[in-house]
Image (cartoon, rainbow, N blue to C red; front, side, top):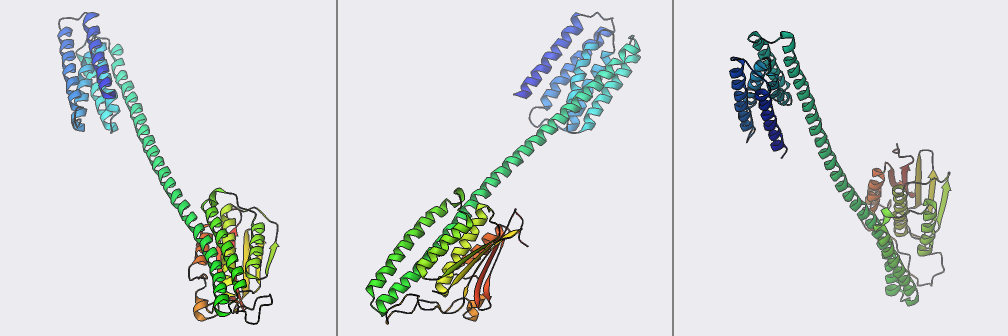
Length: 409
């Protein structure tokens, strides 16, 4: 559409040039045929130029040649008295040449027009000083073409940058969606691993009470606790789906709640210590520490039942450290006074540190999964660290997250 309008304007300008040349000026017996021939030849060259723009547009050499001929014809005749109007044809050709891909095209057409004007002066009766304006017009047309070319290049670059920015935004949206799915999947995994691990302990205890000691009343109590834990686990799973869109409770408060729940469900003493001035953490970091504590408490209930657990939360200048420790080895009897035929507390012979295989599996979970490995990966994404393993007869899990967005050394 724009190309058609452009050529319509050029055709109209050519017609106006002709009307001015042949209706407002009188020429001598030599000038009139020269102007008529130049005007007609310019029209033929314009048509040829238009044909070159149809289809593939012709070669660069063909296009430059036609434009140079237009500038030459119009420049040579424009210096004749009364024929200055025809320089408009060369003016248009020079602007178009300056807009081309190569600057050399513009200089070539400008040189052809300016040289033709100087040669035309040799056969003209016009004042040489007055005729010097024709090369200046070609020079002005060349500058206008170069400016138009720079504008087109800038517009093309801007369009390329906008396209690139749009592709980048699209890629960022795709990555954000994938990251959201990954994090939600991790949250669901962590909640289920914790809930099912703790639920397995209760079911194991209920089975022992029913099969070994026929203690129906205590088995019912254990199953009631298991049912409540399953319901709580389902609720936590639902909350995990929206974990990234909801506020996270204060870290110390959440740890205290988890400690109380662990004592109630598993009969273990949990000692929570908070050192340093509490500082708000980003939701991702606080949630990562909460999940680490949750996984560690579940492991402690499985591998060291009814043994005391120590939870230490320290706010440092550059990081926040969460440490959970519990004794290694088989569990002790429940603190309550059980009947003489009460079963031993369920325990896991493959507890961390109980065997070489157990010590090697530093990041294995209560059911052979990779919960702590997932915690470690989560913390690494946040610039934090996670260490887990036996130390001085105790199983120790240490998680660190940075403050102020700096990675933990």
